[in-house]
Amino acid sequence: MRRNPTRQFSVIAVFTALVCIATISFTVYVPSTRGYFNVGETMVYAAAILFGPFVGAFAGGVGSMLADIFLGYYYYAPATLVIKALEGFAVGFLNERGRAFVEAYTRRELKIFTIEMGLLVGALVSLVGFLYYSGFVELYSGIFSTENPTLNLFIPAEFWFGVGAFTVLMVTFLAVFSEPEYGFAIISCIFGGLLMVFGYFLYEQFFLGVFAFAEVPINIGQMVIGLTVATPIVKVVKRTLPQLKS
Image 1: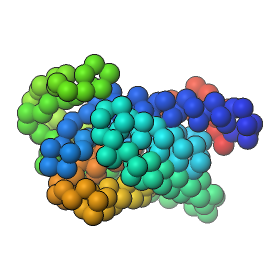
Image 2: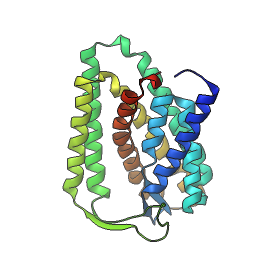
Image 3: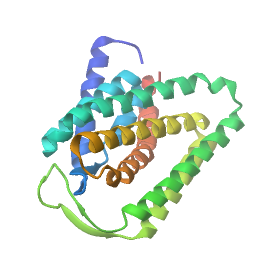
């Protein structure tokens, strides 16, 4: 994408809003840490992969912080601004660096690498979902209400095994028929997501004084679901608007 200041500002504004909306649209409260699960990572990763580290950092940090304030988790807002900005920057930076090394590998090697990343993500989706997101859950949407559950439902463990299998198939399809180099985007999201997990762990442990370990699997779930959803979003946007390719 050309570095047009007006266009860059518009992109930052749009993705900051999208990160905020994605974060508040679907949440699960975590009593032990007074935090919450959300799907904001989907837009943080999409912004970083599509437009690079600086858009990813601003949209991720500011958009997520605004969501914390809107939902009443103001005690997380300062940390969120820093942690999500670092996450967005890391994903965008590593993805750009990864693309620079594409020419050093054969197409077959890139396909194998991406399929391996797909297997890793699929296994993580199945494992984390099975251990921490199965059973009866209360879902909240900040769009409708921040106090009362929007939906109560039962999620069977088989659901997450299905999601994991679908993720593997989706990434394999991308690797074989479309973008064999997409493994670099996946590994970038994993690294950025682990920064997010570690950042919140430190903040909760040393500043909030809560049981920080309780939210580690929750944040890993955010990372895994975020990159799983962001992958097709990025693909659709690139195909629909090829001029966005950098």
